[in-house]
Length: 263
Length: 346
Image (cartoon, rainbow over all chains, first blue to last red; front, side, top):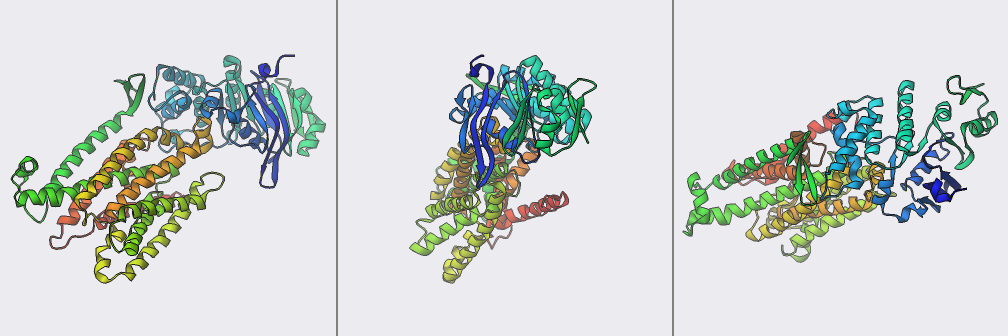
C-alpha cells in the first residue's frame, strides 16, 4: 500500500461539525482518492454540503481536521490553498453586469496580486479554460444573459482558470435539464481524464452518480453509510437503509453501471 | 500599453494593471467636466468677478477685494466641496459594492447620521465647536461598530447590516433633533448644517483634514478595489479564491466609515452624494467593478454643481448644499425603489 499522502490529496480525519446543538457531521473519516472522480450522495439534510464546505475550508470544524497534502487545511495560507483546491458552491452569485470573460478571469485571483493584475500565464490559463468548456464565443456576452447550462459551464471555466488539481462542486447539476446535466458531467469527466484533476461532487441523481463516479460516498445523518465503487455501494439494501427507498437495482443498459429503479 | 478585449493592460515593473477602455474614456471626460465646474464655481457668485481675471487673480499679489473674495471666501468652500464630494462618492461606492446593494450607502446606513450626532454632541457638551471634527469621526466609527456588532452573525451578515443601519440612522437623527431643540434659537440655526449638510460655514482650516483624508484614504481605497471587486461574488466563492473575506470586509468598512465621517465632520451629512455617485459611475462606464475613481469624480461633480447652485440661485439667501444634492438624489432613490419593487426585490 502507498503512503496515505500519495494517494489522497484531501482527507477528513475524525471530522465533527455542529451548528449550536445540531450535530451535522460526526467522527467523519474520508480519504479522497487522487486523480479520481468521487461523488457524495445521500438524502436531503444528511450533511453533504457541509462536508464539501468543510473539505474546502469554508466551515471550521468543531472536532477533527481536514488535511490537504497531509497538513491541516486551516493552518495553511488561504491563498496557497486556493492554488491547490477550487470550490464551486451550490448557487454562486455573479457580480452585477459582469461579462463572461471577466468572470472567468477572476478565477486567476490566487495567482495575481494588486501589483500584478495581469500576466501572460493568466491569459493562457483563461484561454485554456474557455476552450475546455467551449465558451470562447461567449466571452463578451453579459453573464446575466446566458442560459442555465451556459452559466454552469462559465462557472466551471472560472474554476479551471484557477488551475487547481482538486475541484469540489456542490450539486453542479441542480436546475439543469437532463441533457445539460449529462453535458456538464461529461465535461467534468474530461477534466478528470485529460488534466488528471481530482474531483469531488455532491450529486442528487443516484443513477448519474453511479455512472460517473469512480468512488461513491453514501451519507446518512452526518456519517458514511457506505463507500466504494458503484457496484459495491448501490444495492437494494443500502438504498433502503439510506434513503428509505424500496427499489430494484439492475445494470444500466448503456454503461453497465447499477441503475436504481424505484419499486 | 496594449489592448486586450475591452481592457488596456498597463505594464508596471514586475507587474501589470488592467483598466477598462470605457472607464478610461469616462474618467477623462469627468476630469474635463470637473475642471470646467471648478472654474465656474470660482467665477459665479453674488460678487461679480470677470471670467478672464479668475486665473490671473490666483497668482497676482494685488490683494484687492476681488482677490480676497476669490481666495478667502470662494476657494476654501469650493476646495472643501471637492474633497468632501470625492470622499462621499468613494465611501458610498465601497459600501454599495460590499453589500451588493445600491441602497447600502453610508447616508442610508446611518453612518452619516452617527457622525453628525457625534459632532453635535461635542458642541452640546463642550459649548464650543473645537472638537467637532473628532466628535464626527468618533460618532461615525462608533455608529459603524454598533451597527456591525448588532448585525454580526457568524460573520458579517450584509442583509442584517442594512436593516440595523437604517434603524440606527433614524434613531440618531431623532437624537440630533432632540439636541437641537435644547439649544437656543441662534445656536440652533448655526448648527442646522448637522441636519441637512452644508458647505456654508466652511473655513480655510477645514481644507487640510479633508484633503489629507482624500489623498490617503483614496489611495488605500483604489488599492483595495482589486479585492472589493472580488468580494462582489458571494462569500463562498470569494473565500474559495483565497481571499480573507471577513478581514477584508472589516478593513473596507473601516476605510469607508472614516471617509464619510471626515466628510461629515466638515460639511455635515450632505445627503445622497454617497448614494448616487457609485451607481452613476458604473452606469456610465458599464463596468462590473466598484469604479472608485470614477465614483469620486461623480461625487465631486455633484457636490460642486449643487453647492454652486446653493450659493448663487437665490442671491440674498444662501441655501444649504444638501438641499440641492437631495434634489438630484431623491428622484434617483424613487426611481431605484420603483425599479426594485417592479423586480420584486423589495
